[in-house]
Image (tube, rainbow, N blue to C red; front, side, top):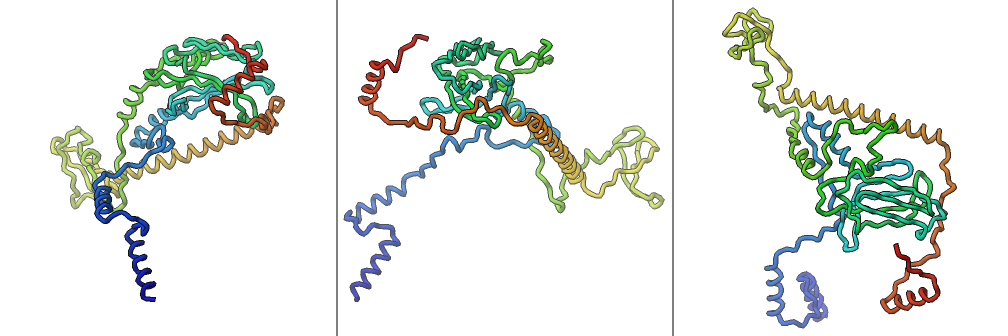
Length: 367
């Protein structure tokens, strides 16, 4: 019993020291390894690419610059969908074969459900894009800018996705942007997008391009707002906002005082006999300005909420008028369900490829 109690006590001590009881290393080696581990600097945690936000933390400028900043964020929003009916495109990032995220334009074109990859021909240059499906031209457009496209690494594929509540086949063209290109494709992709039905250009006032330098200048121009003060904090610079000048001659040599004959504080000018009532506020100037800004922001938030509700009602009314979507080109749920992905070694893949070539299932074509 004494040996059992001694064994349990030693086991608890070993467990508290986090040392394996089966370790046969000498004490000197264990001490050296522990001291060596303590001497090593801490290893920073490995950050996954998904942990890095594309735009980083959202900035909040002062109230006078909020509208300009909001307009800038809407203009540079990468999640904005540019829908033109027969095609639509977005700007974002795609993971290449090496595992790096690269900026690209994602062009999508709806297809019929019986279209296959062998019936599609695409001709891409830095100036023009032509896509032919089963002998019919679906895209034949000139690019708005000819200096950003990486033709050699761009590719297209067919995928099935939900388009306006209908599962359809979509040709997805990934147009990579050159690494040395400083421009962002957020306004127009094709030249025809800049014109209206009557032929007039949409950009009557020529705007600057959306590039890195302009974005950095806009971010640097934003000023951080003053900290929000509580009601019991009364420190602020008020000399410039107390109207310490004469309303008659404009002189700053005035005295604010209340005589026994005055009902309120008055401004007495030392350069002219003009007397006017002084500005009186129940709160310090800094808190009064903060209160006005809070009221303006609340009013702007209410107006924005009403606009969003009106937009939702308008979209719901459009959907009600349009009725049920056209499902003639809808792809069934079990599309390609029978196909299974198999892993081959190099020898097995070469054997399968050789047999398919001999049977005539694969034919080489010159593009």
